[in-house]
Length: 257
Length: 253
Image (cartoon, rainbow over all chains, first blue to last red; front, side, top):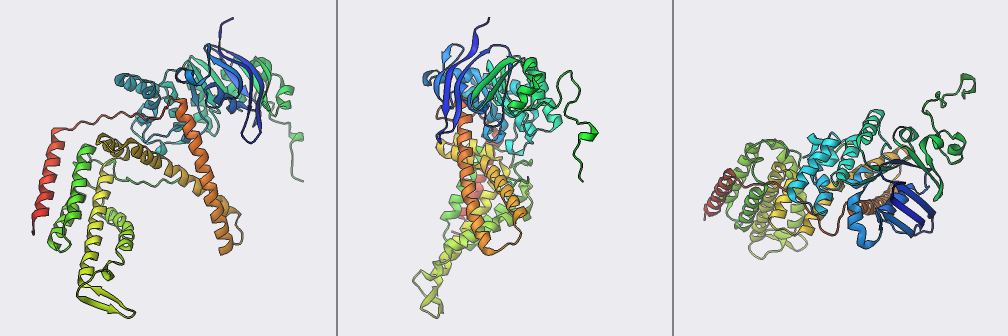
């Protein structure tokens, strides 16, 4: 077995108001795979992602490529682990798209001409190069989402953490984003409610509920276990290789009296 | 969502738009300095400044009506600041108001000075902001050694004022859709709640933005790149501008 790129041992975290967000979490994430991180609202998916990058720190141990997530290692860890937030307005904070995408590389101390190269490459990767000089508040939601991805790709991370990448996207932009993620050949952890996306992109699934790890298995095993999904507030409307199960036969449909 | 622009016409193309932001900043700061230092009684000099500014508005292709409208929205602030000046100077009384207040000629002149200088400066700023894209303007200021913290604050303001405005709009719409019988008391109460809510949301937004910054290696200093180069035309522009402004300043002396 390969050495895990992210290793979590006994991670616990409570929010300041006492809400238990993560409870005794043990996980190993292998390099090169795509993981789907699923669970109902409040399961601790986002909280977990924020821990990998050292934004939050709870009790327990996390290490990324063998480096423990501690203050002194944060610079190195953050240049290897890219986190894409759910709300693009939080992630895009600079006056222009260029400045936003260049923010990470400049902080990493990259030489100026390399920064420009990295910005162009990252924007090309997400098909947004024409927007390089624009202000992000003039862009559409789908465009902002893609720029968010570029702000992290410009840092050439080894691991990509995505928080609800397809939330609020219309079908066309959702499809674009999925294709884009498919093309990226790096380790990915995708926190999402979009189980179809998990079915298409992920080889393994991590199911969390109330801060606890329920199961870490291959995607096929988890997604075909309807009872398990339903027990944790999830549902798969279209299962890969199965009939549309979301459509009820006519007689079972609710009809107003 | 509709988006308000501070720099609506900054993406046009004109001789003025194409100039290096640093050259424009220096030119307009000089112009404002000269306007501010002109004694209030030199009416002709002010007329020439106004003429020069009008010429620049036409040359830049900004719709004159837009410039006038935008400048008028700021006039009340100037008037407010200058309101008591006519009453507060000693001198020959021009008008006495029952109740012991007198308007003096010196007071009127000071009042006129503040208003006209204020107005001309506002027009200059409108010209600068509408011929330079805001991010370039910020970078120009940064190049001219304006403290970075100051630039950062303004840059965040420019980015998030629209986001907060959107949030306010959404809240207003949500409130309207649930208001059945509007009344002044209810309005004031919901307004204060909304202000509080907006504050909390802005605070949370700030935390999320900070987290996003940290994720991308922020360590207390924002680095930016710029690709400005002061061309020959920029130098001529600055020189030409300087000569005109100084000439106007000396005329009528």
